[in-house]
Image (cartoon, rainbow, N blue to C red; front, side):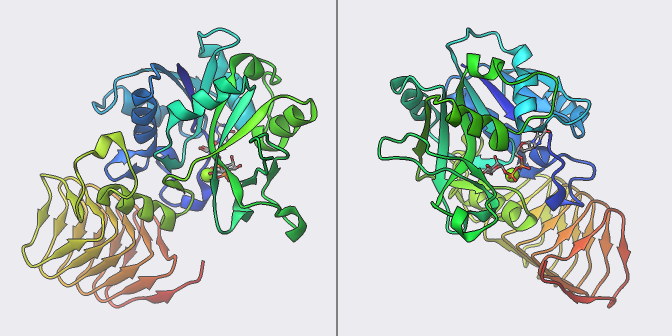
Length: 359
Ligand code: GDD
Ligand code: MG
C-alpha cells in the first residue's frame, strides 16, 4: 500500500517552536511525529510514502536522508504555494504508482494515534467505499471536522469547525486519517487550492459517493498546541500512546544516554530528555519535553513545558505550561506559566518575570 502524509501546514499555534522547524518535525518523545506515523504505516504494510510539503519543505528531506528509525521509500511533493489539504493530496498523487482502484492511506501530519490501519483498510474494502474516514469521539468537537454517520457507518455530513451550537450534531470527529480510492484523488482539481474538509468531502457526499466513517476508540491526539504537544510526548514515553518506535521503552522518563542528570534531581511524568542535556541539583522536571543541549539549573522546576534546543532555565526558576524556544535563556528566580512563550534567543535576566497568561 502507498500513503500520503500532509505535512505542509504552518503550525501557527505552536509558534515560536515552528519558526525553524515545521510542526510534524518537532520531536515527540525523541522522534518527529512524522517518524511515528511512518513507522505505524510501515507496520501496516505501507512501502511507499509521499510527503506533501510546503512550509520549510527542506527540513523533511534533510532529516529523512540521515535518520535510521524508519526504512521506507519516501518521496517529496513540494508545493511552492500551499495548496490546502485537498490540493496537497492531489499534488502528491503524481508520485503514486498504484492503480485507480487501489487504496491510498492519507494522514494529517500532526496526529498521534495507535490506529489499526489494516482494520480501516478492511472496512474500506468490505464497503467498496470511495473513502473511509477514521473517526474519534471528543468532548468538545468545535475545533475539528464533525462527521455524523448512520447506523451502517455511512457518512451523513461533514462540517468543518462548526460555528453555531445547531451545527454540533455529533461528538464524532474527523481524526485526520483516510483511505481513498486512488481514482477519487485523481478527480480533485489539479494545481489549485482545495480544502479536503470544506470542499472535497461535502462534494463527494453530494454526489452520493460511498463515504464511510470508522470510529476507533484507541489513543488519539491532535498535536496542535504546546500543551497537547507536551502531553503527547509524555503519553508516548509512559506507553499510554502507542508507537512502534517506543515499544518496550515505557517508564517515567526517557533520558538520552549523553544527558547528565544529577542524582538529586527528579525527572518524572513521561519527561523526554534529549542529548547533552544537563539537569542540576534538586531540579524537578515533570511531564516535559527537554530538547538537545538544554541546561536546567539547580532547584529549577519544569512542569508540562517544552524547552527547546540549547535553551536554559535558571536556578530556582519555575515554569509550567510554558514554551522556551531554542537558544533562549531564562535567568534565575523567574516564574512563568499558563501559556507563556519565550522566543528564540531571548535572554531574560534574573528575577525579571512573574508571568501568568491565560492563552
Ligand atoms: N502540504 C500541505 N499543504 N499540507 C497542509 C496544508 C497545505 O496547504 N494545509 C494544512 N496542511 C497539513 C498540516 O501540516 C497538518 O498536518 C494537516 O494538513 C491538517 O492541518 P491542520 O492545520 O493541523 O488542521 P486542523 O488540525 O485545524 O484540522 C484538521 O485536523 C483535524 C484532526 O486533527 C482537519 O482535518 C479536521 O477536520 C480534523 O478534525
Ligand atoms: Mg491539526
